[in-house]
Image (cartoon, rainbow, N blue to C red; front, top):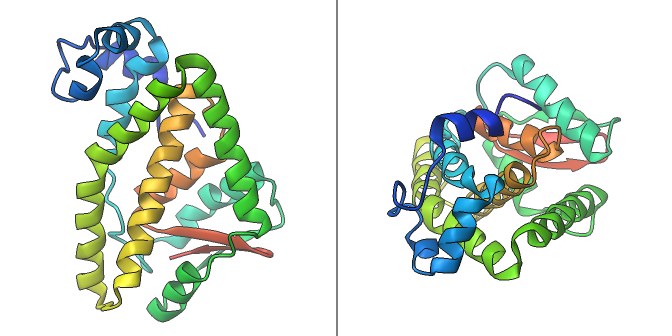
Length: 220
């Protein structure tokens, strides 16, 4: 899935020290050991770049609209690499149907379990690199830096398409934050062909990839 995040380019163009990015990494810089770790580990030096890229995503700006044909390769890449090559994208244009699908996710379904297994594997790899405490700091930092803008984007989408149900807001924000955490994991572990990169690319297109059900990959 090369293209969404190129770790080498990020390091060349935006390599940093904690002095350069003290505001962005103030949670890390409070601890000298953590600050030294960030400076020493190339994988963590990409973190501010990844967060900046995620912050620029036009979350939920093209729900139910846009050039669906252009998104098919991204959707197919996600389904294929997650282990569901028989699943094809199904694009919602009906708000009520999309909301029903988003609010009725099967947390015991095969696709959800596959995503959780992939996330757990990435988490294990990153914890092995940086340790449990640094991993937790990274996840908190991602939440702190991205949650406000994601919440605002979801609220804007809610107003724009006329959904009064606050369940939409909670589901949309949760999906975007989850996708952000997944993208950070992939970027820091270093697996450009991971299905989560295709998933975040669909969010970058302003859409909401909801889930795979049977032979359909549901996208709003």
